[in-house]
Length: 331
Image (cartoon, rainbow, N blue to C red; front, side):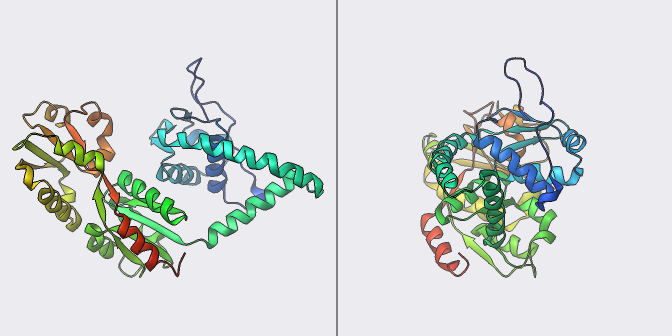
């Protein structure tokens, strides 16, 4: 599951296991094993997990279930799937270090209590795990949707920290592919600009679709404000996304936000990755990149931080308060 930093070897075998007798779905077991390894510090950012095919052969679990576990971990921001090669632990997993310390402190207090009560720690842990799974099944099903996977995940994390409940995330493109999996009890929180698009995609599947407002990320605002007055600025979007109501509204809002800078804006519809390195040498003082383009081409764009700016946003605090009030009956 991890790379040996000294030898440079690939993923080590025999790190996943599956117990059919527990009644816990296979993909949940695999997902939890990765989360536990992260919490214990056995996995760290940059470590490599085996390919989906290798896990299938090693554990005897169907490929679709392994893929589902990896996808859920990627959606949570813990892994980045590399097709055909496995998955890499992301930098977002660093936060698990503090979780580990807190968990160890709780365990040290709990073990003596279990011994005093004559309870077997292993049996207790199984009961606790089952109870947590049952609680999770009863928890509100919240889904945060935005234009891209990266932005939806970031916004979902902000909402999760504010509301104190688990929030899944999805970009618009994946929502179209997985719309049939959305149940009627799912409460969907969507960027206001993409509300019409999401309502069309989920028509008849759920009545709980709530808009949230966003603010531009402070770092993005600071960077844009530092550009000279009258700068030539390019806005880079996928051609396919320019047919979406949300994208057009987002462009209008951005142009309105920077109008006092007297920029000379252009909009480019991107068809493929080829021109990106060439664009880095263009005459534009800055190129503002949509989150969906950044999702796919981050490796290229991050090589030119002085030129490319990601259109980053945060959930508006007042909007979060409104969401909390409207979903009070759910939470």
